[in-house]
Length: 86
Picture 1 (cartoon, rainbow, N blue to C red):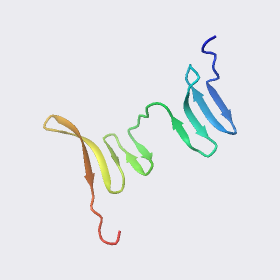
Picture 2 (cartoon, helix red, strand yellow; picture 1 turned 180 degrees about the vertical axis):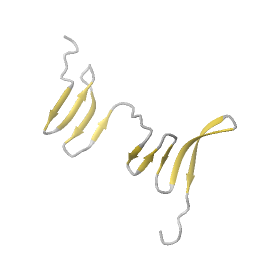
Picture 3 (tube, rainbow, N blue to C red; picture 1 turned 60 degrees about the horizontal axis):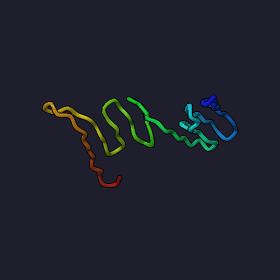
């Protein structure tokens, strides 16, 4: 059988999920590193210090967000100023 592939592997070295062709599409190693070969969909959560919402991606002082203005959509960037001593 051409697609006779071990699609899920769990061991002391980590976790691997493969597609039908045997390509790794998800890999978590023993150090906790995660590799994905696909698209991530999220409308909430956090990743690398950035907060995900349904319309924006923001950190402490920077925000990327989508906005509809006068019938035109776009991607916008905002930044807040830091005060002295920060």
